[in-house]
Amino acid sequence: MPEDSVLLKSDENQARGLAQYAVDFLSGRFAPPGQEALQMVERFHLDSVACGVSAIACGANAPTVLRREAADYPCPHGATCFGSSLRVMPEKAVLANCSAVREWDANGTNFGYNPAAGATAGEFGHNDFYPVAIAAAQQARLDGQTTLRAMLLIDEIRGRLAEVFSLKDHKIDHVVHGAIASAAVYGALLDATVDQIESALGLLVAHYIPFRAIRAGEQLSDSKGASAAISAEMAVLSVHRARRGFVGPADIFRNPEAIFCLFQRPARRGASPFDLRLTTSGDDFAVLGMHFKLGLYEHQSAGAIEGLFGLLGKHPALLDDERRLRRVRISIYQPALGIIGDPAKRDPKTRQSADHSMVYIIATLLRKALTNRRAGWRELMLAPADYDAAALSDPLTRRLMERIEFVHGGREYDEKYPDGIPTTLEIEHETLGTLSSGLVMYPAGHARNRTADLGGLLEHKFRLLAALAVADAEALRRRFSDLARKTAQEMADLYDFEIAQRAGIPVAK
Image 1 (cartoon, helix red, strand yellow):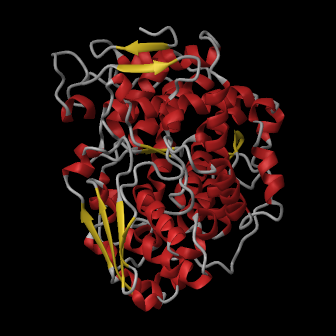
Image 2 (cartoon, rainbow, N blue to C red):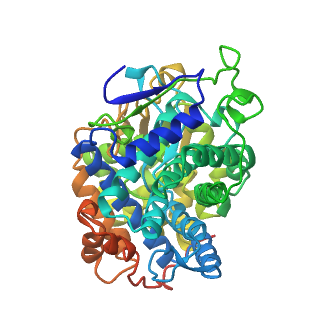
């Protein structure tokens, strides 16, 4: 076994092992994590902050409702919400903040794919859970370095779980992995014992499992964006309940009636369905294989976006006359077709459906390119205004949507996912003929992309979103940068800044 990892074997109590790992990691028992991994976590965290504060400023429904809920639970020794100094119950602060971070569906993503370790379950996940670490830091008076390590640990646990167990295959929502990570890390930060953390994990998995019903239906609702937040709330609550003495089910990963063994029969009696390897030090952390979204879109559409921008850049005449664009054909893999190609999403009426509609995303980018005569990630980056009521009903967008065909590319495409985002986009033009992007595998933002100016694109995205919420986006960037250097007091005050309410940006519910 590599010296910079621990292995929790399927025939041992992995819940207890996970608790011990979190305690050991945060107590400094292992050699320190590498700077590359810590810097990547900070980059993902900064990205999540821009997403969160802009959602609040634009009056997005779920974050607004949940912030009001949090304010009804004041707690002098609790945690704070974005843009507030009011201390509230920590689970309510986590609920409100994770909801804001996730609302746009525009922050980090992982695909649960680690072929080098033979761990390719391919579960989704997102970098939604950093507010859990902040809430613990504010209660326990922890400095920024400890908090940053805790964020890395949350991503490590949920990322490695996503590599070994696919929740979506059993219609369970992917946020469960993040909730498990949150409970383990939050408990360790608050000096919970291994017994208490194990109980919290048992409570969480036995009582609070969300199914993918929250993402089903013809038009999606607030439940889609708030799923991680609600599960994180339950993770925090489970830790506090366990610390008060409540004993939850033990050894939950091997429990035959819990989700893991119930839905995926173990190879041996008395085992869980998987081994779980977790990094302890160095730079081989799961976060380095995670991906950025460069705007507001479902990540499965990134290959098509890259293909579109490539064709528009090579053939600017495509933007001369919208009427000459006869057809756009997008070929892609499963499950992308099922997620963003659902027939109901050909006529999205809510933002939550539109940002999961391939035809809407590509048609909107085409409409912006035709209108502005420009093409590229930076020039056309999708923002909240691209999903407001006017954008959803824009006549040009709707005309373009009718010309987009979205199809399954077949086994050739399926075999290349989740290594990449295999997609081909073709445009049939009246005078230019049929133009093809070729196979796109690693679009900008993907962890294996080596050509995009990722730093520059992320800075542009931060300014684009943060400017919706604060007068000085650069000052906000400084506030959330260099976490490792921040004192406990600076962490306590981290969310104490003003968020402007942008009433002029209507957001479709």
